[in-house]
Image (cartoon, rainbow, N blue to C red; front, side, top):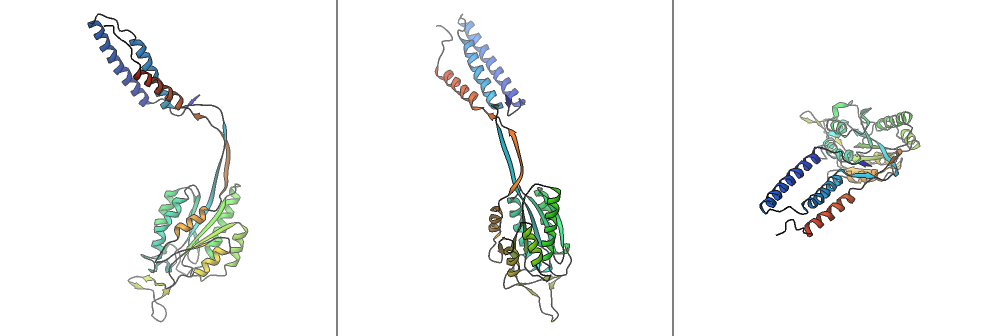
Length: 322
């Protein structure tokens, strides 16, 4: 037999209180018996009865566990890389307070929903970088998410191929270091502006590696201006630059890898739909092991204690003969 809870100070305190109160009761009964010139009949039977159900209550509290059994435990999970666009266009204010600030507000919903999965954070513009490697550490992920800003990456436009290639590299490295299979997911968060090379090659490689890519477009079709200093970014004709959401490129990324496209615009956020779609991806078995299981049988001593308490409350003993 094993115990779910160790004998602690709490049980000791309960025991001392019971002993002190019952000792006071016995002293009172003894004085009353002496005053009536009698011996207290059956008082020791009462003491034995109450002591028994009090002990049974303590045993139930400790949780006796017995009975041998085995159970196979399987842990399943996913490896999720989240790539966030930090190009200057993400400062546009067509989504309030800005595209990037809206992403920083919505992203914790995604991270906390998959706290049993490993999540990593990539950042990119014309190049891609690992901001946080795959981890279970939610606190670290939240910290890195809140420090995202467009000054962390080069200001040379956006290349959507960069995060795809970096994610593929990191997933392959994980496969070499860990033989256990996991579902691999890449989430690309961007306004979709792409000044890079053709996306077909990295997408083809991702599909071969069984990486599903989900894309989250941020922005609006009408577009917005890009803040720069105390004014806005201007083009060569001294006109304000207008950046618009390019959903086509993001839809191509998702569609080529059996993923889905979602959007955050000035009217609505589809982050919850993205979470549901990722949640529907079946996680692979991370680990399988067999453990010994012993059931907590606290209800047996508890039931017996309650029956004795009921017997004590309903059956009266003649302690004194008058």
